[in-house]
Image (cartoon, rainbow, N blue to C red):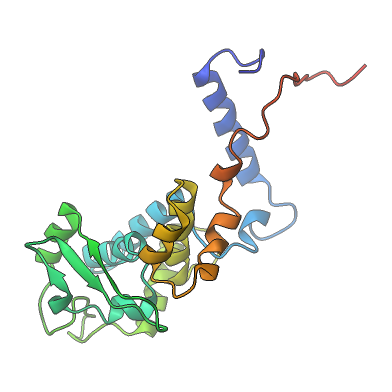
Length: 220
């Protein structure tokens, strides 16, 4: 630990300060620079988005729908096409029918997901329905996510596919093996999966360490 850092709490305080400073910097733009080219959400932003969805009408359904999309890396069409027949509460699994010719796979369900499913009305064979008691359309889902982003006060436009990418980057940053991520995401080719590992910050952890000291007074 650098000599000017007193303890871990001191380091965390400085990290929080830097985060606030970077958030405040607009550099003449409508939003922070790091959001300009990003196609995914951070874990904190996913949490904010879910909270924003809960502030809308049918908030509990909306929040669960977006959280479910993130957890299982679902495309918009995949969550809209989710059927009750895909869910097995006894084995705690859900069959993920992948779009775009992807590899379909069974995912494990968490207990809170089982509970949330029991709270949803069963109007038809589809799990997620709109107020008209018809299956959600991808267009409706895009509008829901965009509105949730505004409610969450995220200063960039959010779309559903950002939740799928968020899961991919989250897995990569937690050092989940590449082939496991590929299977979980339902990719046909591992080439599609490498986009997550290429920029996963965790793979570079510790590479910036050395014995040099950082000074605050400049060099003599």
